Length: 233
Image (cartoon, rainbow, N blue to C red):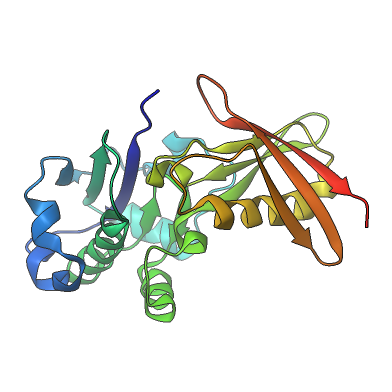
């Protein structure tokens, strides 16, 4: 089954798109720009209420300044890169991150939203993270673990593995008091598989003094199902 590598970010109130070659010279922009799977577009904002209401993502919570910026925004810019072919490296992720930062700065942006990882930033916060990392392909920066609430607790799911051609991961239903533990373990799994071509059948993660085995079962469609087991000392 073909796995798509996809990165997509929305940038509110961006007005200029002439940044690409000038701002991303160190990420081999010329290679990406020659390929039709890189898309840059400026669009009118879908409505005065803002587009985050339509996303219906429970863990995305804009701050008051972000909401004010959205209310005053007249347009948004979308930058995305889609490939159905295996890629040799992660330059597309590096390019998208610096493109987002440049658009927000040049266009006086209010919000940067990573559509795939479902992470929301102010432009200042996004730029500070880039400066601190030094490498925009960092797994912690490009991914997240979210908690989807249910009647009996919740399900932990990854966001962002799709960017490198891997299926996302999802646990079975867990108790709410296990949320912190499960999130930390899945973050450890993400770091292990981030540079792999395929998901392994299992991964081992240490959390404090405990050792956990994470069994990974891929499905024909949707996220891979993971089972967490605490191993004896």
